[in-house]
Image (cartoon, rainbow, N blue to C red; front, side, top):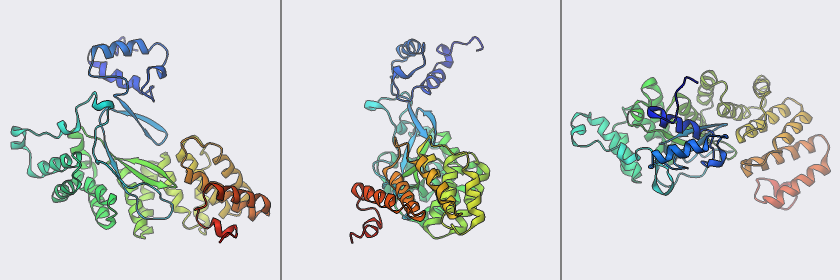
Length: 370
């Protein structure tokens, strides 16, 4: 646009990342026409890079390219409707096929060196040592180091996520509230060491959200922790703030409507859910989850036929949708069939669901099999 060849000189790495944004499977075949030869030439100039080295990370309905990120797998709070798997493997890792990557490995980024250690504050050294232990798979040592220096917001955030994984919900909440209170300081040390920690947080029916050490991510985690401890008021406060800072974020909307449906007798709240979800399509798994709760809000307001239509729309796309979510949609729709006196159709739906998932809660009893 400005006469700069993006594949030449200092713009090359930026251009490579930009091109890879089109390349969601890290394959030359997915690049727009005309880009493949230029990327191939770029890779010949930079042999340390290769197709697939820049991994796309799906966040909700967006695709973001990161050349270095840390992955945190978190065990969800033990609450109904959440099915996330327990965390496993190292909490910090550096992705890349066959161990190759375009960016500096995480462990190297966390190597302070003798002289740098001389001028690094003790608390920051403990933070770095904690991350190194985490990267090496020693979670106990990492937690010890991070909690010893939890006055640092980033250390508190990481310690909170480890405690969340271990289902130590009270301690996790204390750490994350401390990190959140730090405001703009949260994330500063991670940025200093060029690290991008991520956590997979379950929000509804097998759907996970990627969160990071930001206000948005931390509040989403605190919503789950408040729910786990029965603090509905605390969860509502975090959600109201999230609706202010991220009103167009589908993950925030999904979390909001899920918790709102804990009180279907609150008609004002149900009306709000219906209004907030009116534009939701069915493009992503997040959208499908939102449609489930939109249908429940419609049913709560005495509109079962409208709810059935929404659930039918939500069940039409199956790719990438969690099985549990799709089965819940079918179950809710069958219940509504009964409600509108379509009992034979309801029975057929329940029987089909039982054949696929006999363990579905309450289904065997409904069919008279127990």
